[in-house]
Amino acid sequence: MDPLAVHKALANPARLQFMQWLREPEKHFDEDSYRQQGLGFHIGVCVGDIRKRSGLAQSVVSGYLQTLKDAGLLTSERIGKWTYYRRNEPVIAEFAAYVRDEL
Image (cartoon, rainbow, N blue to C red; front, side, top):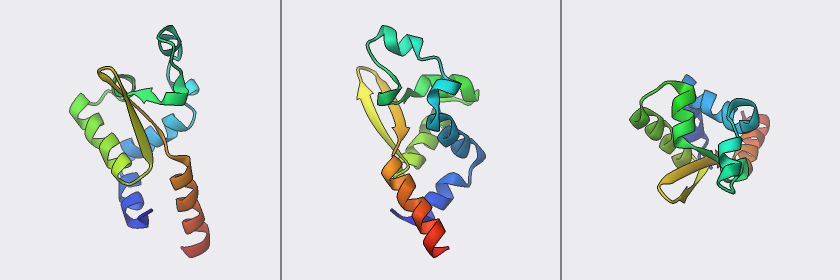
């Protein structure tokens, strides 16, 4: 975990909001369409759903999600033509411990 990369990734309001949405996806996204496909939020949230909720362009959302993933805060899974993102809780816990103990 690179604390500086995490700080930089979270410094953008939209990226921070994505992390907050993904903390409790059931509060921010409709899981019914996932269930119809035999999926659930345990695999993550589709980029398209994040794009719709944010109102940002697909390319911007994809770039922001990649930044969060590069910082280790997200993991992704590709199913068919869709990519799903979820929080990387072990890295988030490591960062929280760093802030608590080192900062």
